[in-house]
Every structure is written in structure tokens, then in C-alpha cells.
Image 1 (spheres, rainbow, N blue to C red):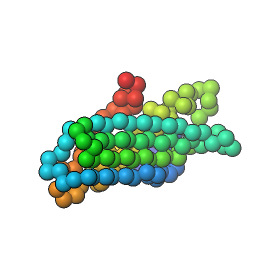
Image 2 (image 1 turned 180 degrees about the vertical axis):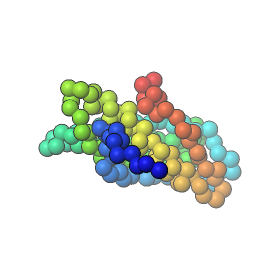
Image 3 (image 1 turned 90 degrees about the vertical axis):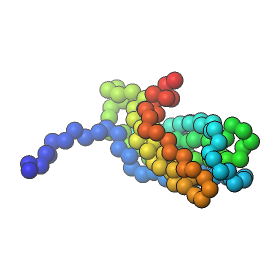
Image 4 (image 1 turned 90 degrees about the horizontal axis):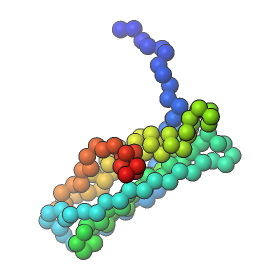
Length: 136
């Protein structure tokens, strides 16, 4: 098979990522999963010394609607490098939309991992267009 050497390189590169907040509180033994409230947040910071470096924080807060027997707070930070001219791209939009789409699978996975424990049905978020969700 012939190797392709002229692949289109993305202008957005994920350099590193880490969870800076992982919190799971469960106040009682819940046999069935309660109805949940779920909120997402995002924040973009640009490096003042190196304007091509950005940090995107994607967070979620999940609580049950009844009695706060379940509380989940996660915050994931991704470091991105943008190799594009600001005049040709809306860099902030690129980070907010594509960066969130890149980080969301890691957040989904961590939620499932945290909630996969005895006596609790794991929370498995569906694959969604998270960037579109933020637009709404």
C-alpha cells in the first residue's frame, strides 16, 4: 500500500491535557440512577508570552434533581497550539468549537469511569455535538 505523505495538517494541535478537578460524592446507596441535572462550561485562556498557545478548560457539573445524593464535578484542561494567521481564522472560535470537540470524549470517558462502581449504574453520556450544544 502506498503511504500518503501530503496529509493536510490541522492548524489546531492538542499539546497536552489533564484533569484539574475530579470530584464524585455519593451520599447514600442509590439502587437506581436518579434523574440528573447536567451543566457544561468552557473557558479559554491565551498565553500572553506566546500568543499561539491556548488553554481550554472544559467542565461539567452533574447533580441529581431530588436531594443532591450524587454530585460530580469534572474539569479538564487542554493545552493547544494554533499554527494559523489570526487574519485567516477566527482563532477563538476554532478553540471553542474544535477544542471542545477534541476534549469532550475524555470527559465522557472519565464520567463513566467514576460512576462504574458497585450499586450504581454507570453514567454513559452519548456522543453529541458539544460545540453545537454551547451555541444553544
